[in-house]
Length: 216
Image (cartoon, rainbow, N blue to C red):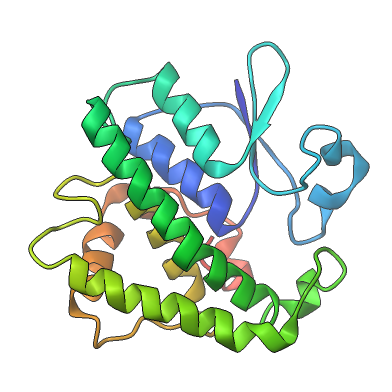
């Protein structure tokens, strides 16, 4: 297997997941900022053009961060991050879906349509008028999640799961580009510090982040 890698919060999600599981794979970097992922050489591997992707042993490719992590969990089940039992896996998948649908997708598009529009305007369909509402929707759900997290250390319970990694990588990126963490969300703030202190949070950062001044 080989990780098709780049700067960015989504590739970081997969790298952080791999770090938590102790998985090491060879990698090939694609220049996301230069739009290399939107060129034909990469699009033949991943027609969606998103980063990252995973080249499998048979030469085929899979993309989509959650799918990639699910695949790696099946190939390398220990230590489990998505779950050790059917019940744990169902609970963690439920929370990952909630995080993606209600928070991270809105935060990412809020960035693409506003602060990141110069980078994305020729790559995806941007809707600048929607940016503020998307950001507000994400914050509303973060406030809801803050209340739901009373009495637990992580999103789905008391073990770190893929939902924590996905939300952390998004918020760590977004906080410096127009979507700061609301200090009134005490549970979310404590959770963020808890995840941020893990070795995987540091080791998963792409070397380019210091030059780009964005954490991805």
